[in-house]
Length: 303
Image (cartoon, rainbow, N blue to C red; front, side, top):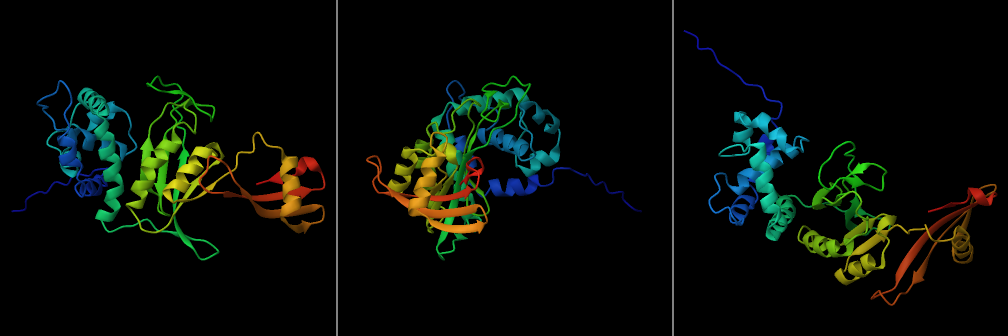
């Protein structure tokens, strides 16, 4: 007599790996210790709520309502080791409650940077032409396009669309998550970034003993950021914001202090650096320039 076997196919088998990684962290006990005012004996643990949301995000699903499709999904529950899958209303309400507890944010960020080392990984470095190795930290705002939605916090971003403007930081050539903060779309790129750097850098140092190299775009060309890097002993490359500076002034500096190279007829390249001191900085900094002068002034390029 032959017994029929039944196999169930799932489109989200990768959640098994997500669940295993989550169990390598201390998220479950730390989250379950948090106390939400007015919620003394929750039917579902805080960790089950958070793990369920992580399960959604891992599949690119960000709406609370998406959880309803998994309430009867045995694999979803088993992979994330949940006692029960919450409803959309409970998921929303509990996460709103947890968000009011300051400690909850630090728990998530701390465990995010501890996980790579717990599984034997370390962010890899980049090697410069000088032979020096640095572990890069990339910090930037990455606007989301939430056009035609009415979610809380959605507003006009600098990209010209309605959405959010989260501040994100990654470490190493692999791009391990170091920091993430969802912000309203209209939030200025530089708002409180110097304070956030003071949170990021110690966490980055806990992930590697190698020298760190912070890389930021022109939107973060601010004296406060430079001061934090110098105080924390972190190397940095921050693109110069030329919006209020004269191209002619930089051309004069380049011609006076740079090294000239003729690229082709009518096009000369000037490279070099200048030493800059400022009362707001513990130490002087260098501004590196790469200026190209073409026969027509309107076609000059500045980097």
